[in-house]
Image (cartoon, rainbow, N blue to C red; front, side, top):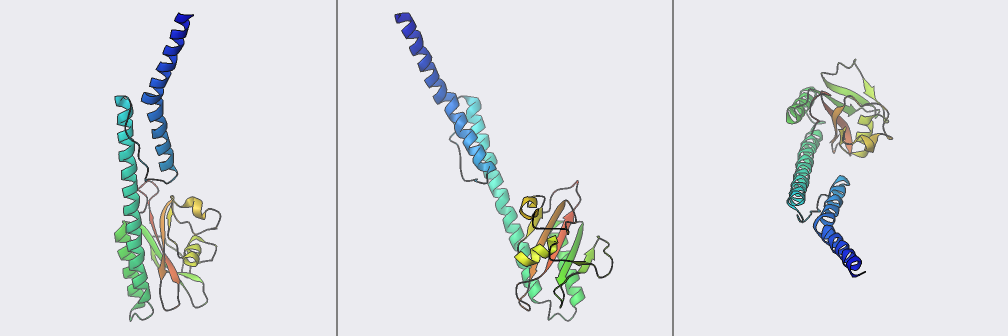
Length: 212
């Protein structure tokens, strides 16, 4: 009986050691990974346990930090582009050469994000959305988009949309106007009419990197 009791105690002790050294650190690492997958990139795991688990914790922390930085850089880049378009949009109505100004806006944006195609779509006096500048799409003359299209949604909400990353956000709200797998749609704002006066759509090839 004493021998059996000692064996049980040994099993319990081994289980406790295993939990502290392996299972506990692994659970904490899994919790951090799940938090990152859910968008919480502020959590970190304290590397602990055997060398392999400590290495896993360190790698997980590095990955989370890098992802957080990349997302911050992406947000800053998009904000800068949107800010530039906003400032340019405010001058459209008073431009002496509107067509040239629109072309410069579109070409500058293409260079900024290294897009292969672009189109600038502006609201008309009838509140339609008409293609003003076409770079590579080959739209027929007087091509227009309605309010239910992706450009229409961008103009209504004043929000940027990056595909495929934002597909879930607009999947049920948009009917048409998705021009490429990798696409960035940015609102163009202006004070002349108040709010958004159009949308700039930039794309990259499906087999290339996403538009940032």
